[in-house]
Image 1: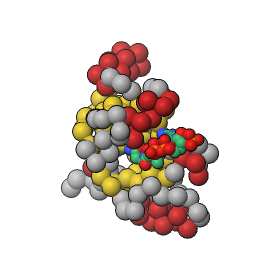
Image 2: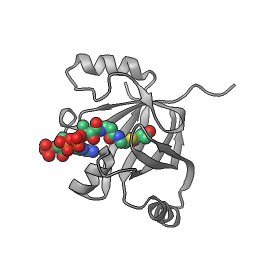
Image 3: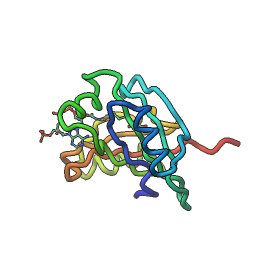
Image 4: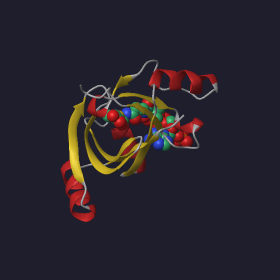
Amino acid sequence: MFLRIDHVGIACHDLEAKIAFFESTFGMTVVSREVNEEQGVREAMLHVADGPNGSSYIQLLEPLSPDSPVGKFLAKRGEGVHHVAFGVPDVAEAMGELGGKGIRLLDERPRHGSMGSSIAFLHPKDVGGMLTELVQAPPPRT
Ligand code: MC0
């Protein structure tokens, strides 16, 4: 079902400070910065590696407000791993398959994700305590 680990999302209080840390410590490069109002985050994608099934990233997430998902996570748990995202060929198909297995879907339909992707979340309580994201990459530009 999964093509790759697309990204690991890290919740942080100060996006710019955390970007500087990842750049200077690991030599990573920011490839995208976005504000996603629907998800309540300001986020940056830092490239890790390329593979036959696509690239993988670290995603740094700063909440837009305390009552957003990442804002609530920070208040409860502090900075750290917020979610793991798996690349899938077709997010709607993966949602149907996993929903059919009794995994609770946190989205009724795919939503807009980083870098033009389509995304959906699975309930952490149904995935061993890990908030899980499905990511379908956008079609390549022609
Ligand atoms: C909450 N829980 C988590 C968790 N957040 N467990 C693991 N990882 C997380 N990130 C646990 C809580 O500790 C609690 O367990 C239970 O789940 C219910 O949490 P809650 O605090 O009662 O409920 P809420 O209201 O905080 O909702 C949690 C939930 C929500 C995961 C349902 O955050 C959500 O719908 N997330 C999906 C959207 C999202 O996270 N968007 C931000 C990233 P206990 O045992 O204490 O009951 S957007 C993004 O990443 C985009 C931009 C992209 O990738 O492109």
